[in-house]
Image (cartoon, rainbow, N blue to C red; front, side):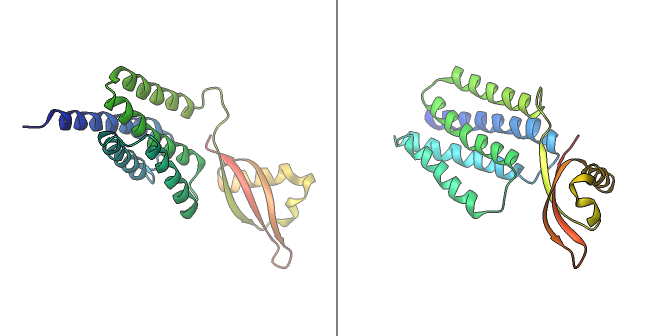
Length: 193
């Protein structure tokens, strides 16, 4: 027979995972249709919940939870560049289990449910861009129509970039020009409209 504290711990971890799963599957994934970070989000969330459950069960301070954030920031600078949207979700996935663990251990179940529902709702609203401009992305491109990089031909170049890439190109920046090869390195800014 399960110890009551173990049963509560399992129930709390299931509620935490359910909340994280709702955020990842119903809010994050439908907008990007990319599963590159799904594993990371759910794994971070689950492991942090278990660590925080251990910290609260042996009465370590909440400062240990913030120590985890310091560890993640170090990892951030040692890994490949992660888009800002994904970093935001990663932060939420790291913060949720800390909140859930503390609220669960202090028997504040109503606050826990309220916090999780509000986080999910706010992320859902913000990720749908209600009242905000669409998310913008950047891409580096080598561009051979070097005659179009002049300021007075910006509109022509934007039109050409839109036609050739099929993207909603909003702007571009010339990073480097190679006159010997007649190419320019440019960074284009586009949205997924």
